[in-house]
Image (cartoon, rainbow, N blue to C red; front, top):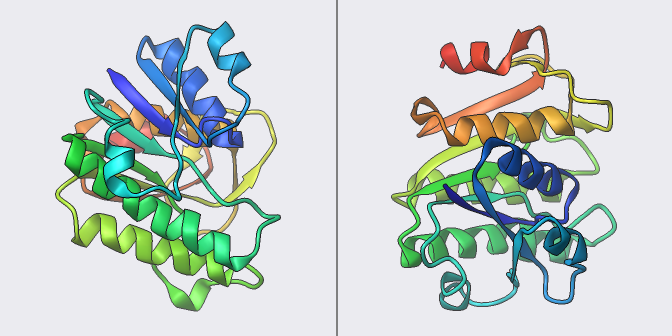
Length: 213
């Protein structure tokens, strides 16, 4: 499967590309213009400029022939709310529009735990929660994409364990490596289409969680 990873140089995006390679898929690393691409070229991964500030029609030209897209981009913790709006919300929506223009069927989104519940939006991340809320709403209500939304808890740098849980009420954290592994598994599991899936560190294998959907 040819899979375009938006934000491939990010902390989760990089792990997603590696997981895709290990599974035998063909990832394409979508990078901001000017980002370093030497690591990917050394691994034989095709790289592609993907400027989330560009128009959907421009982005669509990068997605022709792609089977699926994983949106792992983010404005980052060091940026202000204006870039959260332009990247995490409008950039995500433009990517969805581009995917539909290009005929991409499958779209996986990394969101945030409780993004759909304003009562759970904690300071100082309200702007990011709002961006995720409206981007997720656009994906689920304004597109015909075969979507999966993964809502991880607090992202940790602990080593991946392969043990997770999907609990709509619980709070907690999850290693970035387990988020990446779950995304790649979900990509290949049609039972995840049309689903929003909370994800935390737990005591079940990824396969067990998918079996319970």
